[in-house]
Length: 325
Ligand code: AVJ
Image (tube, rainbow, N blue to C red; front, side):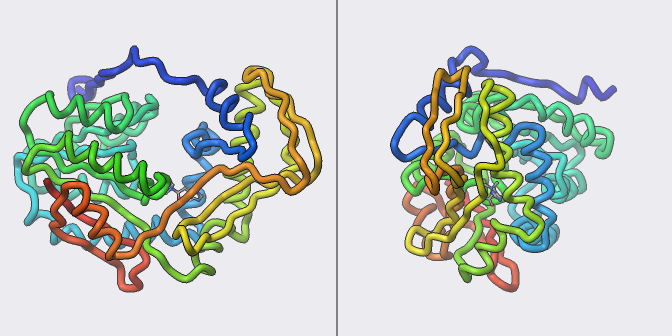
């Protein structure tokens, strides 16, 4: 029974992507070294991120969930039976469920289309089907843009596209705009886009959210080096690095780094790299941008969107914005 409710598409499976080894080889073989944040999320990294989401200092997840709970009474006026739920990133998480609760209660049958580059969407889908009787899931294994492009030509049902957790904050301002224009171009008139964005606030609150007392964020950051050790035959000694994060007020972003504690050389065999690091040298691993309400307005109106509604928590720590073409 469950199988007939679940299908997958892999629209751009043949597209050649740069390998992990190649990306690391080029991003560490330069003056300003970096590792892109998508590499955080191996099994261990994904588990650590889940743990981060429950930390007392990490307000975004908890706050976004509280706002989503308010949508239960307010979102139904924006959608009807013709809408399906599309999610950038896949989740069996509390957040996805809060929206599925709304959809499955309003609709006879609800369609949920998670888009994710990794096949982990299989795991969460099975669980969701057990828990919702009138749910059909179509997993799209692709990049967010590739998946939406595929959906554009799939049928003319209305889509409510979800992009939660302030994942958008990882984009630079330029790349973020390009991403939104791309999303906009794949949307039909009548489609909706619901995005969670973290807001500018006191530096201390931000810095403790990315440098928690239990050291889970540090472990999460350092884990990317373990992943390189395991998958690319490297010999990073994690004791020679420390987690460093700071709020850059001017650029409105948390910056995360791995700091080399000594002069050292590291071999990364599969990338063909002998990496020399000086004491105190930084490897950049993440930018997490924060926004003001004015900037959110400008961001969407300048990329072709109309703002339907913005929901906030009482402390104005986080926002959910609903937009259309
Ligand atoms: C998944 C990118 C939204 O920036 O808050 C959490 C990742 N990094 N703690 C964020 C993260 C360190 C998170 N995002």
